[in-house]
Image (cartoon, helix red, strand yellow):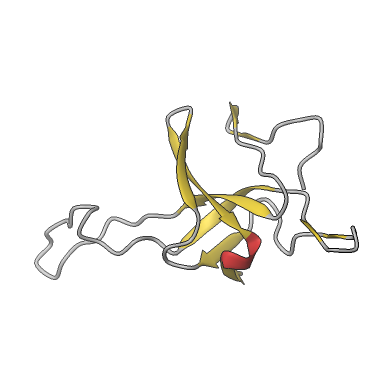
Length: 108
């Protein structure tokens, strides 16, 4: 989990610090080739549904004020809903910010 006084760093680049139950992901994209060896353009391919957790918020707050810790941690590979979250660009890198509820599974 993130230290409240520091931003997570990925390769020396400061990354967004998510709030609440949000998670910052780096979507995993694979270059896809057809049977004939033609590389498909990125706009033709399906939207990626796996990613690496870059940063995790403090967790969800229940109605009674109790905090529920996130089920994922930085470095986890996860499966997420196809159209989940918001894509953001920060310091030249693209990230996806999703609610924890949009994560489907942790990939071991």
